[in-house]
Length: 339
Ligand SMILES: [Zn+2]
Ligand SMILES: [Zn+2]
Ligand SMILES: [Zn+2]
Image (cartoon, rainbow, N blue to C red; front, side, top):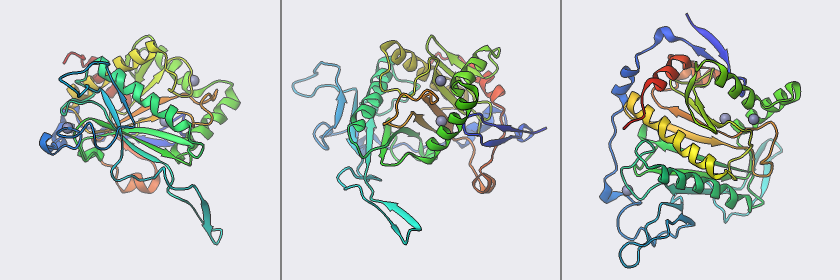
């Protein structure tokens, strides 16, 4: 039997059709991957420390050999950017009907590690902390540019999720507009706040923490990972801080540590259970100019690419999910994180 579920944040609907389900082992067959060779990798190899110039790097404060310090993460301008910081921001329209803006903004690559073959599942907690601190740094950096309204940090892992290079990397796109997925979420959660006088994310977390672990994947003192009630795709995971916070730019040290631990656990579980699947990962925070909204709560959305959205999904905006979040969470919970 199927069920139509509504997501309390986006208010969008999904169809849970578990009769069409596969076992998690059936998803593994599509996970074939051709890796970029180390010798052809632009993030490895010669000259990487000089060209192009890093906008930011997390240094461990030590040097190896004569001159080259070891870096942990680096921020580089994207070679083929979607938006350009040097372009003046202008807006106009064609006969008042077609509105457009200049392509002003930023597009950066964060090289997540100097090691070519590392993944979130195999990285040390120290490395994951460096990545989280780099993300936080990019929010602070772009906040200084008055033209920028939003910064989306995301990660495409493996070709099936849109990655063209296999060296571990994240991306940052800074836009002069608030992306529609975010503004939709904001409108909906604002409504909820006005009606209930509470943040919908806080209420969801409260319920999921009490809910006898039905959809919980992992938790520690300050972070909670779960499969959302209206998961759009099999094994969708949301990670959110237990305490209300609109953005992650000022994460205290213990939360950086807890988030590193949560990312490590979640990706180890995914890798083990589903043979290291392709995924998209994005961080939703409040817009740069309003980081402390009482009704917006930052979170990470992880979407493993195990199925392909087709005509019905594109045409209707309704996803058909063949694995219930309760089942996905149970399987992930029961997959131990030892690697
Ligand atoms: Zn590499
Ligand atoms: Zn909240
Ligand atoms: Zn979101």
